[in-house]
Image (tube, rainbow, N blue to C red; front, side, top):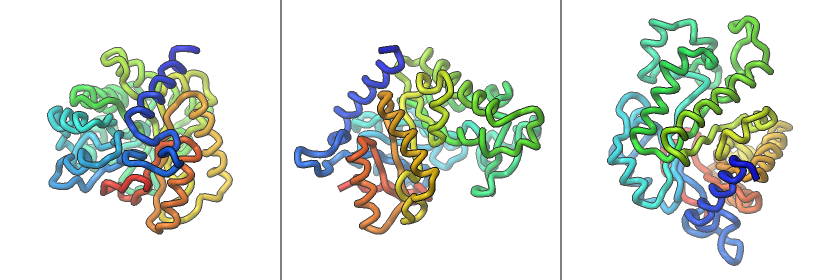
Length: 301
């Protein structure tokens, strides 16, 4: 077993111990307290983390800042959340930038060529030249340093999908294949940088599980976050071809010893029950919540 697979196996074992029922629920197959994870990026009660600390789930993903801006969560707040028995991952984007993020004004003013096309699904968000050293120096490394300094257990990296969504017309000479390799390189660099400073630091990208087919990617990550595996926002069963493809890739990463954090967007009780059943069947940690990610969703069961 190579080092990455050993780390993945150890991670899976750690989560199985820390999160009761993550390998299939109670003795009768039913969910038990602590199933799943918390995924909240805004709407923190009283701008704090007490509600997350009280939740039975043993893994939480939160923003670096309580306001998605520069009001950063402090080390004492992260320490208190970890003291509740949780591992805590810091969310940030690596392939895009939102206009309300604190880095954006200086980026637009001093390195505007890094900002590419707007993401139609999120009008205040733009894809970027994530392969440019200035992106690493100005945005990714400072965010990573902040997560390390605050005491997070790892990072949850959004928008790897930039490699397939950015406008090729704004990136002359680049192909999708080359962009995919550059994204793999960025994720690997994040992992190496963080683990040199804190061994055991988790790197969990969100979506784009097909990147596992590129050399080095699976070794670089500890898990994968997967949106809308079973239900699209909101309450719509995911039946498109890409849904089956994503599930197959998520299973492959699970079989490689990686943690799969699934999040589906549903409100109907039948849909919530269905998603929770699928998580247990697949051996994924799952949460069913709102697309706004503005609350602590109840654990399955």
